[in-house]
Image (cartoon, rainbow, N blue to C red):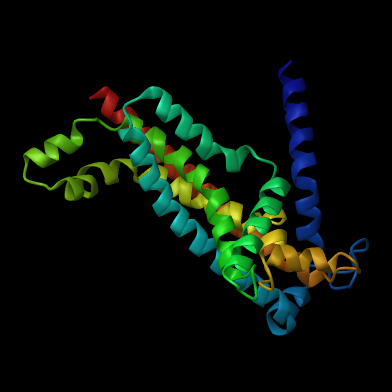
Length: 270
């Protein structure tokens, strides 16, 4: 039975990671081929940084968008989570949580089309020439990232002693200062995890970006436009680098969660 479980797990891992392994492998191919490996070379990585102007520009746009949207979503999500925790009536809290989770549960194509129509409608009301632009795609990314931040911060707030703020205020802190001195340090792991999830979701998004981008070109949109003709291996090189970045972020996420669990375990023992 144990051997069967290990075999099944190995097959699942192969199905999940085989395409990525093949992509990374052929990014080191010396030839312009995706089926025949002629020799190890860093040619396509060099070509990416020397001549991949469009790819690097799209990567820069994607990173700028991901950082801005995840920072804003993290701030708004943390404030929203604190506000939800302050709600006293259970039915109100459940209603707010249900409404908050809609962007996460809703199909991306529905969210993308509805946001595009809303931006066009508002643009015509304000007589704006470009109804969809960088700011519309930024708002769209913040919208679908918010629930992930809220869902990561709320459990940390629930684990925090509700009398912590009162204790800080008794020691002379104002309510605002008490939050930053007493509550914020205890929910920081949830904020970090929420930020990383919002960043990776924004980095990966294609469907919503497709409907709300205007002329702002992100990397997923550029790669989609390249699929109409054979792709160059320098795209594989860029995607391999992005995979390693995401891998590092996920390792960091697990380290933060592991350290937080150890800290909680130490407190329980005490």
